[in-house]
Every structure is written in C-alpha cells, then in structure tokens.
Image 1 (spheres, rainbow, N blue to C red):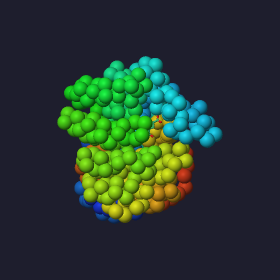
Image 2 (image 1 turned 120 degrees about the horizontal axis):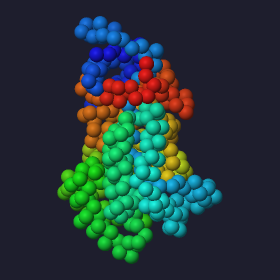
Image 3 (image 1 turned 90 degrees about the horizontal axis):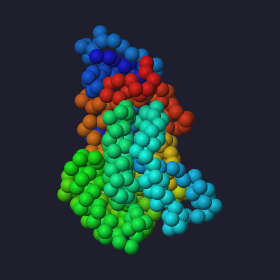
Image 4 (image 1 turned 90 degrees about the vertical axis):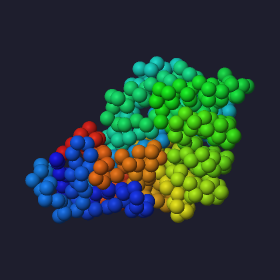
Amino acid sequence: MPVLNNISQLATCPPDEPQQDAGLIENAALVWTDGLIRWAGPHTDIPAEYRDEPVIDCGQRLVIPGLVDCHTHLCFGGWRGDEFELRLRGASYQEIARAGGGIASTVAATRAASLDELRHKAESILDEMLVLGITTVECKSGYGLDEANELKQLEVYRLLNHSHAIDLVPTFLGAHIVPPEYEKHRDRYISLLCDTLIPEIARRSLAKFCDAFVETGAYSVAEAHHILGVAISHGLGVKVHADQLSDGGGAELAAELGAVSAEHLEYISDAGIEAMAASDTVAVSLPLASLYLAAPYMPARKMMDRGVAVAVATDFNPGSSPSYHLPLAMTLACVHQGMTPQEALKAATSVAAKAVSLDKQIGALLPGYAADLAIIDSPDLNHWLYHFRPNACTAVMKNGLWVYGGL
Ligand code: NIG
Ligand code: FE
C-alpha cells in the first residue's frame, strides 16, 4: 500500500463542499491500493497502519485529482486553419458556416477518413492530453451525420477506451447540424436520428449521453426537445449545446429535461440562469471557444453566485476551439470569468465529473475514489494557474498506476 509523502499542497476537491473549497491540505500525504484512494490528509496524521508502508517522495509539489475534460469533439477528419485566417480578416463563424464551411466541411473530411486514420489521429491527441494531467475525456460524435459515419466515430471511441490510459465517455451528437443532403428534408434526418440511430446506439451501449446543438442554423428548441426526449426514453443521459451564439432558450430546455449539463452558455439570459439555478444541471463553460471566436465568456461568476455548478472544459474541435490545453482554459476562467483558482480546479475535476455522471467515482482524492492524480511542479494551486507554462505536470497516475512520468 504505497504512501505518497512530502506533498507541498494536496487538493482533494470534495464534491459535497461548495465550489470555492478545493479541500486544500498543506504538507500532505496520500495512500492508495488496488486503484483506489485509501487515505488523504496532513502528513503528521498518517494512520499507524500505513507508517511502515513504502514511501514515495513527492518533492514538495502540488497534487491534484486527474483532470476531467468534460466536453470535446475529439474525433474528426482534417483541420480548418484556413477559416482561422478568414475570421481574423473579419468573417464571422456563422458567415463561414452559411458559405458551406464550418461544421459541414469537417463532416466531409470525417466521412472521407478511414476508421484507422481517425483512430490514430485521436490517439496521438489523447497522448498529449494525458501528459497535461487529463485522465478522463468526454468525446462527442457529430461529424459523421449519417449512420455509417456516426457509428465510425463512436467505434473509434470504443476502441480507444480499451487501448488508451485515458478513460473516454462517449456522447452521440447526431443533432449537431442538419447534414447538407437533408437540408430540404430536415424532418427525415430527425426521423433517422430518432427511429434508427438513437435506438441502435443505446442498444449497443456506444454512447452514454445524447447531445443537441440548439442554435439558429442548427436545431430549434422544439426539435431538440423531441430528439433528446427520445434519447431519454432509450436510457441515455442528455446534454445540450446551448446559447453559444445567441440566447436561444437552450439553458431552459436543459433544465426542463433534467440534462446532466448545458454547455457554452455565452449568451445565457437571466431566465436561463434562474432555470439552471433551480435545477441539478451543470453549466459547462468553454473559455477556449470564447478566446478563439473573440466572443463573450459565459457569465460564470454571476451563475456560481446564484448557486449554479460550473465546469470548465476545452471544447476541443477543429473550428471554434482547436486546443486541448485544459490548464489554459482554467487560467482563462480565472482571468476572464472571475473564478478563483480553487473554483477553476473543481470546475475541471469534481464538477466536471458531475457533468459526465461520474462524480461518485472520479474527480476527488478521497477514500473510495479512483487513484487518478497529477503531480504538478508548483508549490501550490495559485502558483500553478498564475504561472502559465506549456506543461507543469510531471507525472500522472490512472487507477493507481503511473501512466506518465512517475516518482
Ligand atoms: O462546440 N457549437 C457547435 N459545435 C462546436 C463547434 C464545432 C465546429 O466548429 O466544428 C462547438 O463550438
Ligand atoms: Fe462543443
């Protein structure tokens, strides 16, 4: 039963405490066995039963729970650097989409890519996420938008979940946009989602959640209500891409449906905030998308002050957020959204775990939780999120095993 000692600061991230309390312990120690945390506390309090166990010296570094990136579009063909330049020259994200670029162009590139190509590309991205301290990743489909290609993306996730140290949580996003070939028959595409794809994906357990993009140019509240209702009836949890480019009532829909999360919410209305506050739905903020689109940030401070639990994730995708640097997203949440470092850490650990319904298993370093952790070469949390470096993470443990670095 190994003991990790000489931890300068340990963040336990207790899920039952308020978001501002990351459960920080100075000069701490940690004990794990069989992949689970057994004990965490000040090193002076190590229980007698562990005092003769082998000790690993953490070298006065910060230890945090493995990070949870609870919103990504991990699997896609191609990239869209050309659109980056178009936006810098003044074109808007919506104008590019209306001209046939945007999500539709990634759908074409993803359809053209083989399963192996997509798998290798996503795998190398997961390798780079792991060394940043990320141990669980939610990943959406939504760039196939037909039966074969949505299943191809979900199959990539199934294979990677078996082969990679990072745990994947797959989400079906068939309701991302209406694919170009169904533009004049959107009802037929919605029937394909509801009558064929959702039942098959649920039956084969290829996804845990179903998501829908509620926005002008994507899906209306009524359409998303219908699609997500079918998903619920097949036993899937639901998520909503809501109020990203305009206030479209997506937050209220998520609260009404009992969604695990509403995501983006850059344009959430006061009524949406009140609906979220009265629900158990997590608000997932995606500050890297605001950075890249030069768009407003979700009003996270206001929402947390009203009692909404706010997670932070990367939204990694080839359009609005071509970065999977979750620690950068956390620093942006501090600087642009008024989060404290403790709130930002819980946003990417215990609250993010709740956004994927895993808050009893991961995201905290408490007895019974998975021994998923990252060692950060910083004396404390404030120093880590303030002194931004390409990567301050020096070692990562997943289920009690070192999967990067090690001591
Ligand atoms: O979350 N909003 C919809 N979907 C993605 C963007 C996808 C893309 O541009 O390819 C998002 O920002
Ligand atoms: Fe997204």
